[in-house]
Image (cartoon, rainbow, N blue to C red; front, side, top):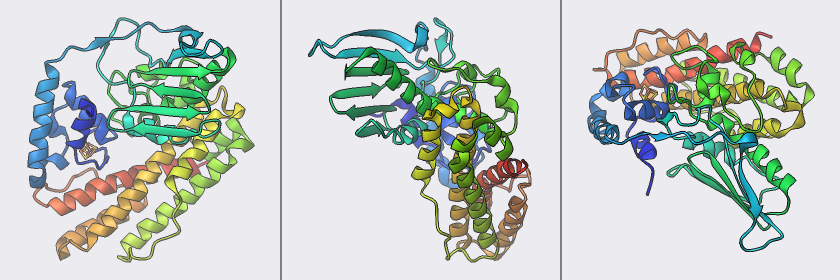
Length: 383
Ligand code: SF4
């Protein structure tokens, strides 16, 4: 059975435009479920075609408000909950670790530990020495297999390992996994994931007072770096040449996004540029997170990952707008074209269209996502 968080996310427009003040529909649905936001905060849900979706969301919220929050468990040193001989073979170890999410033991926990979409995107980048990685977006947990070992990442932040050869290997594997999935940790104050907060697309500017900045059991995040804008120069000076693939990829994506916007502005969306494989792009940054060069520089590499996700979302957004253009009437087309021109410079108007014009409103929502990507890329270029 899928989790209540997943079911509620399914009752959202799934555009991730950020117009509700939350960066993604996933964080919006979490905030609605715990009562931090009203369903009406999403302007897209105000459109006539979403009336049933809106009702489903209201029902889920009413049910959820009746349940009691659990309390945060103890914070284990180095993340270790236990390490002991395996039940089936004494020569191997079983162990349990926990990815710390920044919530003090005993405090109420309102949200799940991980955003399931980001958790799975990132877990699927865990290659060597793992042979098989499976992750369920419905349930928000993942399984990994490597030779005799089996590892499970649970929704409450625990990482369970079986049949591991040595104590050192247990810690090494945990750190490797934690480095790759830490961006999926959800902040207790707002329900946003760490990556979205680092991208600066939330209602609050990148503010290290979010409890999620204390997350991490095998390493800590540098809070002062969180505030600084991510530029090519900053990343290069912090991480050096191991970051070159990430930097080149972000430059390529920048060019691709601008090209797609221009095509959309000319009304010629049929010719597509050579697209970058988004899974491959994510895994390049995930590999960097696991490298020695990243140690002590985690926050800036996570910022690069958050920029990458924002740009990939922007590329999806402009493609959706290009597709929708053919369905617009003459007046609607003119309005949307003026929005596209604004987006080219990252200055989309904050005055939203009337929800009576459904197709214009939907185009505007997608374009807001593109606008966020252009805004961040403009800073990135400013080395
Ligand atoms: S405003 Fe955008 S991000 Fe927020 S719930 Fe609506 S569609 Fe999703």
